[in-house]
Structures are given as structure tokens and as C-alpha cells.
Length: 483
Image (tube, rainbow, N blue to C red; front, side):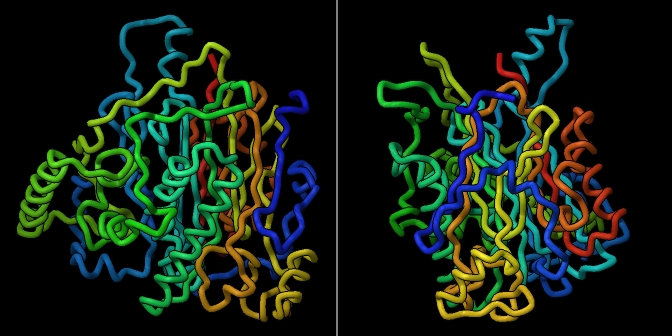
């Protein structure tokens, strides 16, 4: 076990509920009864998010653009692999680690990223008509090598809140980091959740939708010592979009939504090509060329019958060079660096870290069965019946759910964990896994699986084999040992 300074610290981000003094270790209690779990309405199968655009499926007819946009399935951006080690902050893109001539173990370790991500998802066709989960991850988040962003959004009452969050939440977090560089990260997470929740509420009233989603957002940050304490690194090429100040939302959503082809270039540091969101003329020209080529390819496939039937993933141009007008910054400091994992969550999606083989929960299940949450709701004028808020919703905190915003708040529970050699991997998953699997069982099941993609698949299959009744999204992040 590490020293006390590396133990997770936690808090709730709102002023209504007093901060919990319970450490994440004590939160690793058995799962709540199934009656307390939020159950989205019966919601077409979602295959693996790792999709090849050029793989023909001759037995299916490609849906039209409008059909994709109107699909009831939440879409996550397709998982791709970069040509080299640089991902340039692109959403859901892995770096390529190519084997070359024989090198020493030390050289091999130096070539590995600070972490590796695996993600698996399944609609669970036995029980669900549609997929309402979304996920996203980013290597070298905010243009700093070794930083990471990982998130799972579990939707209910429709796909809209989860899909929007999967496509946009990282942009708001980045904007918060750039707008308030000196604020503690837990406070920035709290601000980001509240701004995102407010935006979803606005969009719900505008589009007459009432969906919501639970959320787990993790930010792996590189930090260094300063005379006043710990501080992060900032890439000097970054600039804020103004999202935290209420500017640029419509432009961002035009880029990342299904209505705009530029959604395929959503960046972990600015969807507009410049990492801070400022599009350059060369980027715009490049995007027009890509879009023209895209239309030609789709037209040819329409003539030849070579179609892809999956509407659950946002397409990518695999050869896209978007974002290469900035350089990833190496976090170097004479006083040394440390890795800190910050998490924020609302609802009952959960994150569990393996610390020397021991499961440590880093999130808090916000459910109607929780006495403190029930008291907060009744104090606000609501009620809890059958462990559901106003007899309807089983989670007490979420993003969206505009019609119940007076009681179902978007203030997150946050934790801060200094990583050390004992911290092996992180599991981030929706309640479809945790309904049928205890924290420690999940860790034990995949501790010896080095490949995080295989680990995520194993956990998903375990949940299906144990008759989970919900959509399933499982992400495993395996940390590399610091050099």
C-alpha cells in the first residue's frame, strides 16, 4: 500500500449535500438491490465500436444520413489507430506501437504510452431494443504527453444526453482547464459538470427531449512541484473556446453532431483542428477536400452495394491529419513529475481501480436508496418512492433530465488519487456491469489480462453470462509503470 499522500481524496461538488467523509475504500460495498437501479425504457444491436469503414456487409442496406441522425441508438465515435505514436488529441484514437528491430526492455517500455485503453460495448439484445450508452477516450489530452481522458455515459429515456456528452464533454473540460488554469481540478470538474448539465437542459427544452445520463469522467493529469504546491502543465498552443463563459456552443455542436461532417474530426483539444478550437484556413480547406472525397466514396458504395449497416459509431477518415498543426508537449520538470487521477461522477456508473490487486471504488452511487440523497430530495420538496425520485427515476444525480432538474442535480462526486507503482488498471463501466459483478470480482477477473481490450471484452461477456438486463459499456485503462 502506498503512503497516505497517494490515497484517494473525495468530495461532493454541491452545497446542498454535505461532503462525505467516507473514503473510496469504504464505498466498495456490495451493489445496491436491483430495484434501485435506473432502468432506461426498453431500448438495435450495437456491435463493437471498433469498426472498419471499408469492410463490406453485402446483406445490409446503408441507412440514409437522416436515418442515421434519427436513429434511437446513441453513437460513439469510431475507435481508430494512428499511423504512429502521435494521436494529436483525436477522440477515440489509439497510438500505433510498431515492433521494429530487437531493442532492450527499457527501450520498449519507453515507447509505450503512459496507459493503454480497451473498450467493449453491447446493446444486450435480449433485454434492450436500443443502445443508449456512449463512451470516449483521448490519449495525450490537452496536448500533454501522458495525460488521458476517459468517460462512459449511460443514457435513459432516450439517447440524446449520452450521445451529446460522448461527443462534447471533453471539449468543456478542456475549456475549463484553459480558462481557469490555477483552480483545483475537483473544482473544475464540478464547474464542467454543471455547465454541461445546464447546456443539456437548454437543448432539451429547445428540442423537446427529456433524456438524461449517468456519467463517469476520469482525467489523468501530469503534475509537478511548485513553490505553492502541485501544478499541471499547459501546452502554449492552446486557447479556450469560451464554452465555460457561454460562447461557442452552437459552433461546437455543429462540428460534432450528426448534421455536420466535421464531427469526424472531434479533437480532445478542440474539434476545429486547432487544439484550442480555432480553425485555421488550411484546416478548413483540408476539411472541404475530405468531405468532397467522402461524398464520392459514399456514392460509389451506394452504386456497388458495399454498405456498412452500423449506425452506432460516428465515422472517421482513417487518414485524417486533422490537428497536426500543433505539437504534443512533453511534461518535463527538474523537480520531477507525478500522475494524478481525478474523477467525477453522477448516478450509478462506476469507476474502480486495482491497487495491488485490491479493488478501490473511486465513485459514488447516487441512488434513491441512499439516505443522504433521499434527504436532499425531500428537503428540496420532492419525494422518494420505491427508491425512485418522485417514483420515476432510480438515480438521484445525472446530466440532463430537464423535467426533474429541481431534484436530480448534476453536481458530481469527485475523487483525487495520486498514482504509484501499485496502481495497475482502472475499470470504468455503466451499471450494466456492476448490477451483476462486485468490484473485487471485476478486478480479480481481469488482473492477469495484460491487453486492456481483452480485459474489457472479458468483463462484458461476464456481465452477459450473468444475465445483466441493461446496455453494457466497459472501459479498461491499464497504466504503464513510470520510467
